[in-house]
Image (cartoon, rainbow, N blue to C red; front, side, top):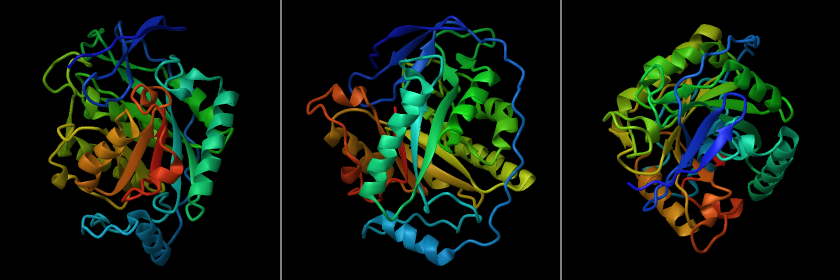
Length: 348
């Protein structure tokens, strides 16, 4: 796979981030830094008091929203066959509209590219667009922060990944308060594992407003440096993540967690039939490819629609989606025509 490297200086820790984009297929734009790990900053934020989940789930309302999500699909694939979620679930009652990125880089996404107030103002515009396109489904704002980034060199731990300092997560949590947003912490494991990375975030995952994202593209099971080939997660990896989150929900009496799994090729997620759904965790299989509208919709239909897990997501790249002709962004109204309708929308 060919890749394009774009280098930018990351200010306070002086690392160079490079953005890898596949020339022959849609791919995520994710940071690869040129140096090793930084020393972790001790956590300063304290876990918020867990908000008690609702006592009962309105199953009739849940079924109504699920049918709205399915959008008339008659294939039998959707809705995916899962149990009802634990009470207090976000999906399918709301649609999550998320801004994605890293505070150290202006190239990794809109979160980090713009100053916080300007970013939030732009997110509000997207929220209004979705509220107009789908008045039936309220919007839940979100900030999706890459807190572990894949690296171009092994670093001190030899894992080709960089953990962001906790003070940056604290900053994202503070920015999220400006719009009452939930927060996703995203992990690119490099040559590491989810078993190594997820427990490091427990104090944040103990908060009712913090959820998780995992990126198979940069899970390098073959030992290659990230960005050389597209990585993968097996169902066993995803099941570890959902089990960990489910245990957090039980331990801290939390509403269900949302787990976002990025995907734009079939091999990125192996053995999807063996992915376990749990009432405490809502799994979003997220179409993460970039390109012209037809390419993106094709990716959604081939790799998200055909392998149902639970819920679906769709990413809009403000810049990369304009690299192909016709160079335009898909609209909320167009995405509402998909079967199933995605309930997690991410802007990068």
